[in-house]
Length: 146
Image 1 (tube, rainbow, N blue to C red):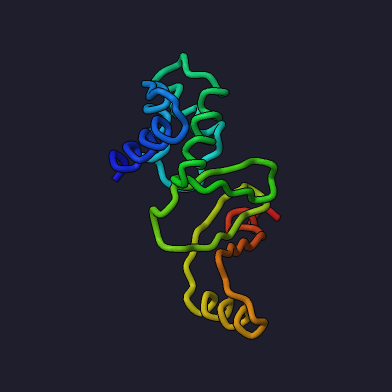
Image 2: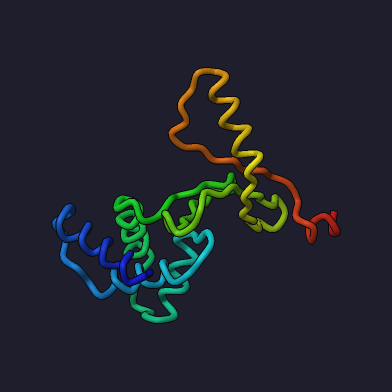
């Protein structure tokens, strides 16, 4: 799957942005698509530097913006000042539980919640285009230290 995503990214970069393909951008994209979850640019930079210590933060930042611009990553903000990215279309729609103690992010799917959101929108005459549900609290580990 990651090869297909990298090919789509490279096509976006070359055809729509008129930029040349670079080994650094390819490494950044490969590293991003090989990892799961919600990754900040800082975390991605650390992973990329393990493979190529010469790649700078600004290069990773610009590459992630291009990946998001290509529709291959979704930027998420969970109230801590960091933007995290998750691969677009990699999995079914999901919502998030965010721990205010340690920052853990737990994804969940709940069909009754999805149906209820649709019912509420319909009742008020809305056609839903997109949505996100984020619940903030303390994970079980952080509850023990409270």
